[in-house]
Image (cartoon, rainbow, N blue to C red; front, top):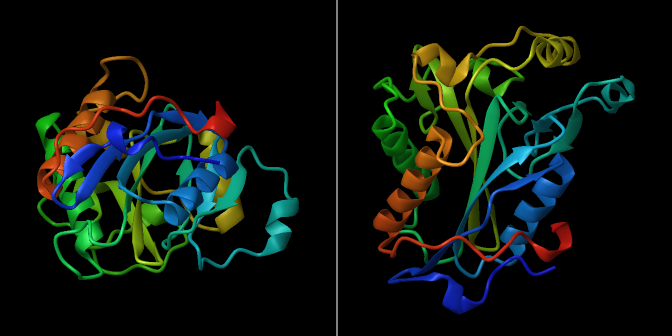
Length: 255
């Protein structure tokens, strides 16, 4: 399966190139397979946005999760991310996700946090431009929880006294891939109740809706589209790229 377009379809950069894949709506297993392929075949900095259909609960790479839980009847899929962190509930209409893959030599520095910082700064700037009033603090005291949005770390994004965007990363063979999740609003109660039963703790997080700057997920010209476009421009500026054009289509295996 070839995920990357031809070199001439990527924007030239002093660090290589930046390329944007088209938005993909697909099941969690498909989404993670695409990101695994990016880790294995990242010739250019690559950014993609996606929504999970049907809804899914993604687990961090090292997160404990008893296999017997999978025998329960659940209203969502359960998948494991290649990135670290804790459980995130995904679904079209209340959340959207993204991934950015950085091949070796594409980041300005060599620290482990460099990919986090580039992604978090670009997303924060784009959300602010869309009218979201961000909290200055990017970190909360550590809280043991199985749920990602129950607490935050340095590169997560907060607004309205809550966490609205989470990031996690994985590094493999010199490639860094950052996962991001933007929570627009509280998920449907059926999904929330199932997560609470499964993980044994109450849901936390009302997302962007709690800030008064709700950003719908779908529809051409929506504010979510504007946030994503601003985010990609911010990446391009930070990495010294021209603003990219979207790829010609989704990965061939998933068209």
